[in-house]
Length: 533
Image 1 (cartoon, rainbow, N blue to C red):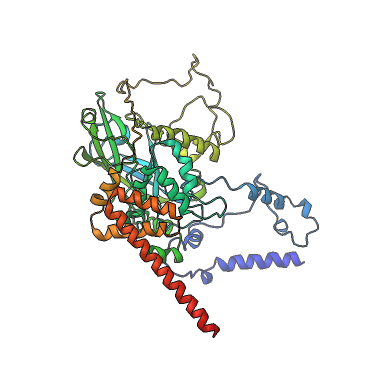
Image 2: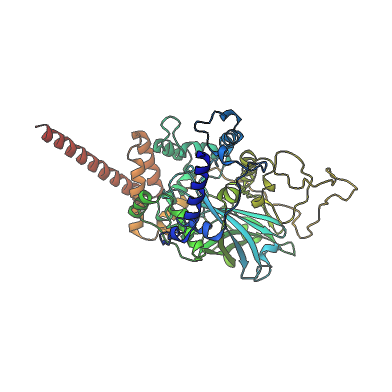
């Protein structure tokens, strides 16, 4: 009898909450807050709840309280087992992110530079999925930290998936790939305190001065954009393109926001972080939900093979910019995100990007960082998602015929009964010949010398006003205020080598910061003495 009453009450409540009397949700412009009410308005009741095998769940099995048959409750133990296994490893870097679907549209003819189908044919649109992220934060961290932001994108072209892994800075942190693990350890949490440690960060920077270029960007206004929509995006590497005549070009891709660069001040960032640490994710979601679709113009900076021989710098050094006046720029098209994902885990957490996912007409950059990232990213996805991660819907290309077989799901059709070896004479998939692809590749020998010129150019040329230079110095001083004296001394020396003005400003700010701290400490002591009397 009590069970019957409970069922009747539940049915009445469900009818009540779906009626017009209960549907007066608070009107809000925040599409994030409206997600569940919007779902209810768009969809009728889903139907009967089932276990994973399809068996309907009896309402008596949704409660275990005072249930003497608990050990016979299949639902309880299945749910517990699922919960124990529903998380997958988070990404080592760029763990926190949000994504969307969209398209890339060609607006300018660049067939003279590449045979890549995705970039040929004005007006052509190619579907895209993108994942925006912060670099250092763990899942659940704040968006409002001064660290590298990123966009990884996958273009579903007719020649395969084309992936770009891009940052909001036009440079990379290091040029020797063996430094990645050490960087990740130094810049993430201290193994004992589990807190970010400026002693470790600066100690590592002093041992690897090329990282200082990125550190200057991180302490500039560019490191705290007003959301993902208002930042530029750079795939950083110099890609090798070839046209139908076999001519080669070396290009850097640049995605320029159509909303214009907008950055937050330190005060704005701190205030927003308290109220909404998911500010970047919310801003992107709400903009797309409100049909304010974020977009970027794709430009290419181009060098010919002949121009490479005339340069006085290494164009394949990912830690530095190309010098102005040594290249020319052309516009390619527009990147637009106009559709939210239905399920963040299915479409974004399971997305797998690799810089080596390229298409005919675009060869991999010759630098060693790119080559190492191609191996590292693929291995990381195998660990996170399994060896068949390319079969997950968000990662699957338009066309895929291969000799890969078996393993953990998803397997799709596992190529059915087709031959599982190559070569074969039984109509298995065959390779093709790209007649335009160059027969030789450029080989790069990188210099190991420390070069502080890119840092000096950033401080004196990229940063255009004195007030901005002072803000950089202020932020650097804050990161040094609690480091050990020997680290501070070496850091000030390194900054002075970049530019004496920078070292002088940071040193002066450190003196001021410590004077303020001392004054506050004395004031608190005086208050304690006064209250004791």
